[in-house]
Image (tube, rainbow, N blue to C red; front, side, top):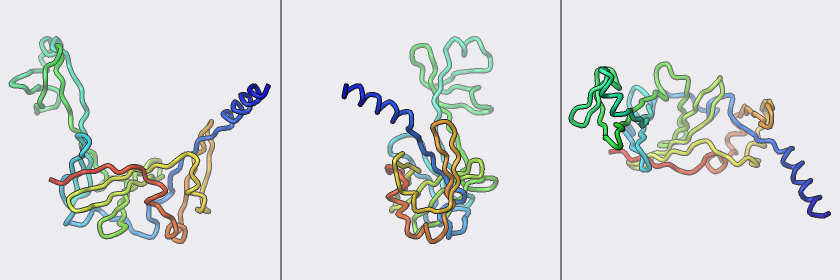
Length: 216
């Protein structure tokens, strides 16, 4: 009977489980103005240690470049005049350009680079400076913001994405917020003031593991 009671208790606990999703009504930190790019001595292209992605910083703003991998069958290339393969390059995938490809098991495999503007003309995202070589990149969606921490160490860029445990109490100190529950998810938008932010251990509380990028 005790086992049945425990199972029933766990069942109702599961039914009552609510996931919390946090974002911010303003870019962080609230006491700093938005800027158009990083300091000039930090300009350059920083390549990911773990993969193909990289960040680019210059006087015009901030970009992120990633590679999307795809493939096309050898039969499609043969039957469609749009595509041509020559000397290890495929033509027709990108207008007026060619990209390297590799033939494996009757399919040509290739990668397409996407360059997305993060900070610059026309972007709704916000960049703010925390310290001499530390910035917060605030991603905007539906007039709400989620932060990413950027720290430059020598020729290395350390990137920490917005992350937290579902049971965290890190946001409890912020008094101004709105909450909207949809299904089992509670969406909470925090409006931090300068006083709350100054005593908030943001680096330890709301950012996940470090991803490293190297400038070449």
